[in-house]
Image 1 (cartoon, rainbow over the protein chains, first blue to last red):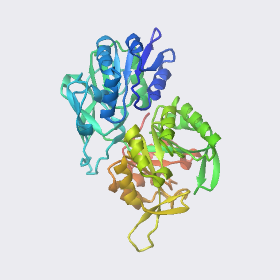
Image 2: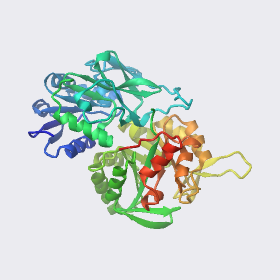
Image 3: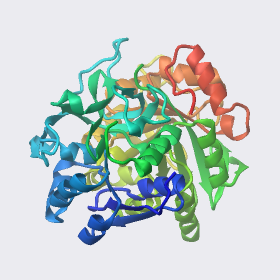
Image 4: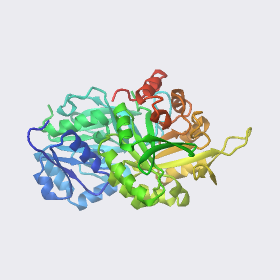
Length: 219
Length: 259
């Protein structure tokens, strides 16, 4: 729990439902001031920043750049804890295969790739795309954001593209869907998750609680 | 450990109350939707589907309010269906806190609506609901068609071709209801479920006919469903979600056990 009132900016670039993440944070810390915003001033003043995202990457990147959030997110990561979620994570990578190839922010080295429609599980059943539902996340290293969350807890995923991280040091959570992919990456001040903590019940709420007290260091 | 098969309780809501019709006719009251959703959330449901069967406009405003209340207290995915006819309806439901919307009749009237919805909001939040009924005679190769108006009105559209078309247009998931089985408690139409699940690359939710926990297992193991939806067996406390999950796990189905 936080000692002082926290100000959390949830970046709104017009893509999808941001109320879920805001209300889940309000639920774990009723005293926190959560603001869904497009305002650069608010984002720079906030103690913490959430960078969400759903939908197609080309549209997301276009809006992120048009509204100037590319520079704001890069700046925020230098100064304070940032939580990226789903397409928010994918937007931080170098490139995505989606929409015939889209250049992303290149804050984290690695690529975003399509799952493909020809994968099968161990029993030989075809794996559906999108990867939709509850999968286990292996915590590949200790991290303050994993505090109080059991190893291999299930989180809610919904995505057709996945992150292939180029720097193994940044990998903190791994998931397997046909093959392993990055469920969570972290650097100083940044925790980026492919899954939706705001939709992941107890484990997800605990992760959001951890974010509100995270000092931005990895260990 | 792979992806868990999802158990989805469905709330049929009319003017702010949860109801469940037996073949859409005999309606029993099962309570306040916010309380019901919270109970399922606490029990470890993997998702909640909210089906608005309200006809009136005043009732629709109640629905938005109810969805807002559920979304502020329930932190698992929430799908809202019923009466979604235009892009503005989707925007309102997503803003109210829904994660996905179910499109049914509007897709039949104008299939392009599914493409517009998926382009605007992303396939991940577009669920196409298909109400299918067997039309082949005994002895003929199995064939199903799409029906509207609670299964009373035929459309002449082949269910398998329709499912494929919906996915091509951008549906991220199919909610498949057998109108032959809905409300009967005789179990899912397994042949239908399996045929559609094998025909499309997106996840398929089996619906219609659950009366026992074995039916849920059958839907996954024999019907190849990615998720199973049920209403009355949960609403009237015949079984709890944890009982259902334990039963499925004992039969070798991968489920999300402890919340």
